[in-house]
Image (cartoon, rainbow, N blue to C red; front, side, top):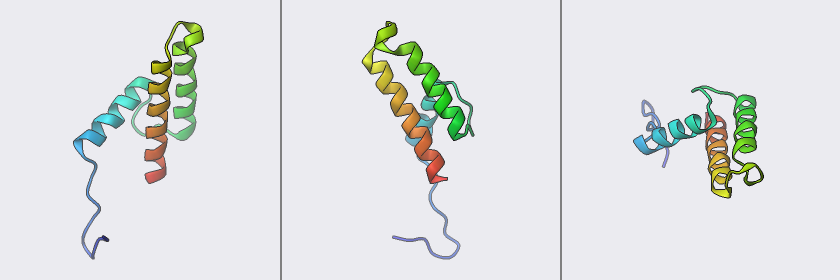
Length: 77
């Protein structure tokens, strides 16, 4: 279903905003972070939480999900 003249796309839901905020916090990036900043932050976080460094697979998966969410938001913009 499209949007007619004068209609705008609905804004993000509370859940989407919360997920985005959580992802930025996990990676330690500010709102408006670019692709390179997100990827660099992801690399740093994964290096810290990797199982080979005493972390866990779950933490790596969380970092990957945060990266993927933030990058998808860039592509949607």
